[in-house]
Length: 188
Image (cartoon, rainbow, N blue to C red; front, side, top):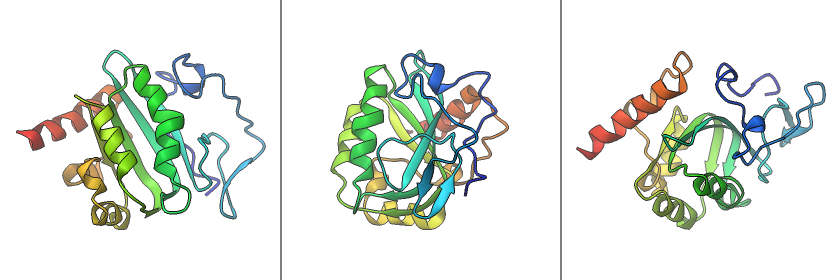
């Protein structure tokens, strides 16, 4: 797991640690010391800690004019024991929403498991984005099934081309437009 880096090809366009509006502004990273882990597995030092014991993230792009953010995750999303969604919402998402972000693209290909609790924080997040949306792309099938089994898919959009989207060759605005197009089709 220590070799899985957050996506870095957009670093010419955006670096959260250099963004004054980012929750991770001025974060310092040590490329030579692996200081984060999920259970007994070390992870790459570029992942950001938001207070969960088993889930890390990286805000790989944010556009405040368009109001969207792209966030990549790694680890185990555990609401049952650690209430990851509460921590994520309070420590990261609310700060981003205060800066005008109301559309969230969550990249979940490195989320290994999901353990549910209740859906209150998802519902709250969904209501907070008002005219925006939340989309999960490339989550593993068993993780999506767990989200669905617990009715979280009412708040986070999964399915269709969102489950197998080739996004790495795209620029951030292209990914945003692709996701937005899919969600617009669903509403129509």
